[in-house]
Image 1 (tube, rainbow, N blue to C red):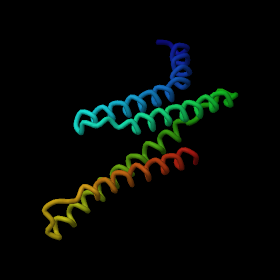
Image 2: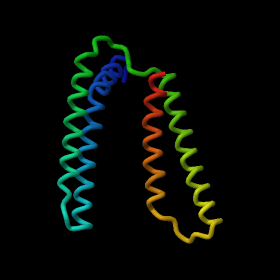
Image 3: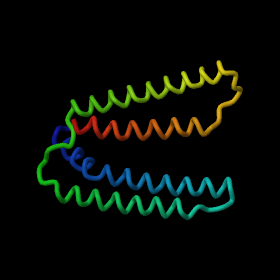
Image 4: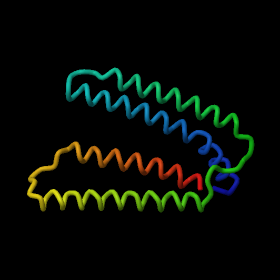
Length: 140
């Protein structure tokens, strides 16, 4: 593959990758709803409605974003990609360290089991902090 082919593929991927992510999100919502139906016997229509609404909103945002873009400048260069990758590496290691220390503290306090609510709180806090931190890191 020569450099012209790579540039053509790069432009095509830059244009269509967000749509693949949106389709993947919609498929994930459908699979999640199907799994809930298989395990609990009740189909959660609100999950599909939320996934469809999110897909429509994200598609509209992406269409507007592509229509407003007039130059060929990429959204991120190598330095930005490197900084975002480093941030996510640090964030995941810190989240694992907090989880490890939390389990150690619970063990030292004599608990035999950990309420799953605490693990969910840690999980969603990690996603929230990593998402907002990734946006901030990308903008700098």
